[in-house]
Image (spheres, rainbow, N blue to C red):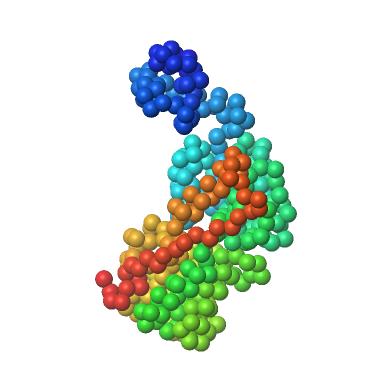
Length: 338
């Protein structure tokens, strides 16, 4: 195995100079840097990451705890976080919490024992009463909506304004009876309550009276639940011409439910989801959605975590960052079919 001393000898420099080049130290002459890099390539020298991490008391690994690994949204988010972490030479270990408060607390409590340098936790089960549980002795960044004030950094989706824009998009295309397929009623601040708030705001903006019959609550954000919600509305004789779905996964089910009941989209019912998952591009019709900029969320979460790990540029208090978003119009909400 080629060592750093071998590289130094072949390049005619000191081992310290080679180390400075490997670690991108700014005070190395351009010619020296080029010579060392050429020698590294010629000798096929590989940095011993494990040894380097051991010296600085790091593992080079961060944890990512998400509710479900088999949902398209979390898969897409996980891939974006892995890519963002790689830019900092960090690996990612993914845990599944099952949307359980107890499992989310376990992820917080056990992450130090699992030798992570820090943890990114997507919360669903934790609530405002659990804020003090976030006071751990290692870096944590929260993804999600349940905890807005606490001792850790928080990266959130633009839930209210994104939902407001989604419903406004349907109204602008002529919809007047817009269904929202939402989660269950909750006293906690969560994705359901926030997106429901955006739905109501968009109706108010357009001067459309709210109709409780047009809110279909589902207990799971699944395709099956989305399809069943629409079948139930149609079978109960509820008239509607637009549907805002709390997630794209639910939205794909809604499209199926409409087709099963002989309703065409977008001609009879226009549909829009939230999350802009890749699968939405391939449904028939393709699914319009709110794109919350997964890459920005992932990059921000990783950068905040790295700041805490390195203790460089560390803010005096926790930060909350809300992602940007855009409306992605596809066939399901287009003015005409096709």
